[in-house]
Amino acid sequence: MTVALVVFFIGFYFLKGASLFSNDKKYYCIYANVEGLQLSANVQVRGLNVGRVSHMELLDNKGVKVTLSVYKSVEIPEGTTAALASPDLLGSKIISLDLGPGPAMMSEGSTLTGTMEKGVVDNVSAELTPRLKELQITILGLDTALAGINAIVGPQNQQAIAGAIRSIQTTADNLSQLSGALGKESGEITSVIHNANSITGNLAKNNEAIQQILTNVNNLSGLLANAPIQKTVAELQTTISEFKGIASKINNNQGSLGLLINDKDLYNNLNTSLQSLNTLMGDIKAHPTRYVNVTIFGKKKN
View 1 (cartoon, rainbow, N blue to C red):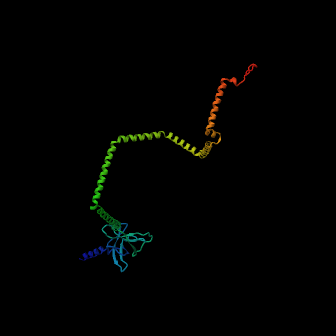
View 2 (view 1 turned 90 degrees about the vertical axis):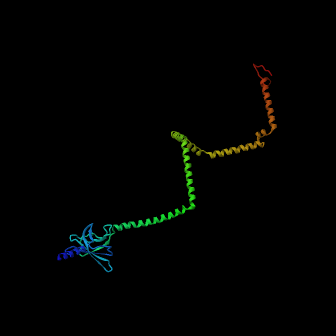
View 3 (view 1 turned 135 degrees about the horizontal axis):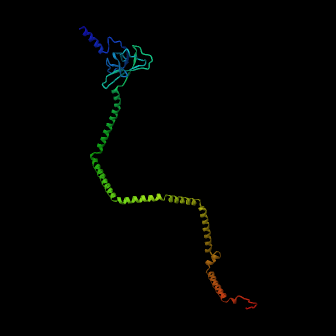
């Protein structure tokens, strides 16, 4: 019975996270909320168990003081922090030691800085919370859209929608007929495309000639641009004005040419004189001796 009581007593304290014969080092840390941390919870460094939670004490207004029992062989450098973390999805808690830079080591009984580390569930919750809000907004928008669709597809608009569908069907039929007509005229369309290709080929072959024509046109445009057209037009206008003056004088019986053109008697007299002159010239040709004295070898003949 005595042995059984001793074993029970030792096992009870072992389950509480304490060991009667242990020489583990004690460290302390304070948390505002331990979030369900249990006695005998593991104390880990980089995932390796190096001790247990041996005691927890509620402070007045400062939070909860947690006692850590760390193996004697484990050294704790200065600057080490004790993070309250969740290693799995079940919500269990452990103390994760983030070793400091040192170089000095913390003495037994020192108080470590306690921090809170988000676990897997916390991270998933942090990721899902905004997504749930977005999903809620999306559902509200979808509900509004469905309400609008229900308002549109109401009894009053069903006939209009049916008419629109019939119009779409008619348009599809017309497109089908057009496609059939184009299929029948495919030969002519092919010929037109062939002719267009031929014209394009001819233009490509005569590209140099077309370029030369364009060059000549440009040169001609340059010559016309540089020609004294304005001066020539001015001189032509001056000449036309002079001809108008001459014509005006002729019409007004000024000068010999005006008198000759406008005086009928002068014209008749001149015509009669020319006829007489022609008659005289004819008589001179027929009887030159009547008008010319010719001496041959000293003999005179009147």
